[in-house]
Image (cartoon, rainbow, N blue to C red; front, side, top):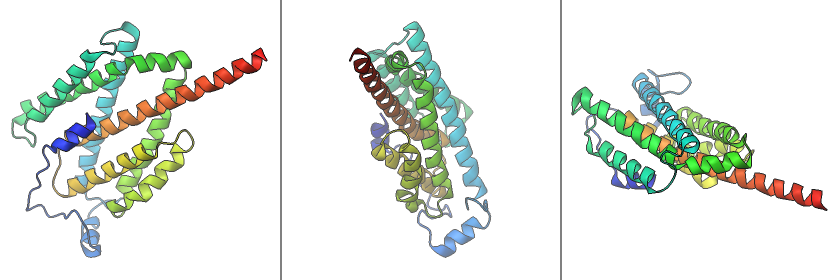
Length: 250
């Protein structure tokens, strides 16, 4: 779903009059950063945009968590095609509603509802995975959440602290890898998320301030990363349990 949404490229038009260029020279960046945070160099309006993105991302993550727990415990929307169909329907609905205040507050409310349904449906689709991981080791879901949060936090920090967002190909990958190596090898997923975060900052500078769409992109990267971490941790735990069982038998 993430790659489909990106290929569509919806809402990517950039206003020609917006004063922030996507590629900075030293003078332009210095002038831009002079009015922003001394730590990140980001202007206040970009900081507010990122805050809105992460608030939306947090709400989507909470909806996905609720969907996964409800699915795993009650069997409601437990795997199968139904959660996927609901997720696709919510995504198409979100894409069809105009952004940028075109439809007023009612349109933004409908977009928020569509994101909530999309997130909850994705969480429900992961209900079987949650049941599997919990059966292997009850503590693994919390470990997977914590590890993913640390890695994603490193990527977020690199995105806002990098003086040039293009440096994320180096700095973002290295900083996130320090955390990733403590748990699993997720180089491709981490690099994709790192570049995606930097691209969002660049697009915000270009005038693309659709916080909900940017949060959708981050959510799909975050969700995919969490699924990979959970699966790898569960498999590693199973191998350890099997070795321990063979050792007891011998």
